[in-house]
Length: 112
Image 1 (cartoon, rainbow, N blue to C red):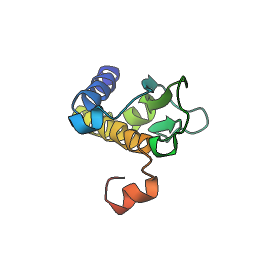
Image 2 (cartoon, rainbow, N blue to C red; image 1 turned 90 degrees about the vertical axis):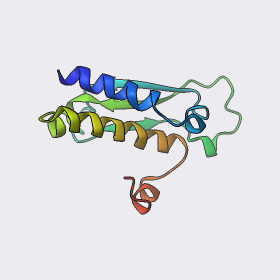
Image 3 (spheres, helix red, strand yellow; image 1 turned 180 degrees about the vertical axis):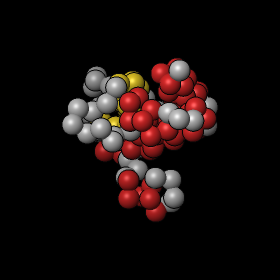
Image 4 (cartoon, rainbow, N blue to C red; image 1 turned 90 degrees about the horizontal axis):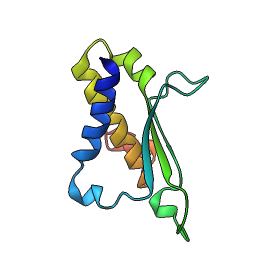
């Protein structure tokens, strides 16, 4: 059950982005993994060069956004609607990092 909720929520998060955001996302791979070894509380991770810092970025491998299924399920799997909402939130949070928005800034604007 939860695996489908997480996968469906990741797809929903990407498909329902406002067009002005979606059209600015490029060279990013979004994937789902079980969890980060040794770091069981990490829900998502952006790995790459945020857009504001990109220079000479042609032919680069895609940046990666990884959403971690097991921590999401442990924390929110008791309620499929909550699991869906938190997965979508995590995807949006990692997309913010793609645009160079830090955790500190996300806290300031109440979107952490």
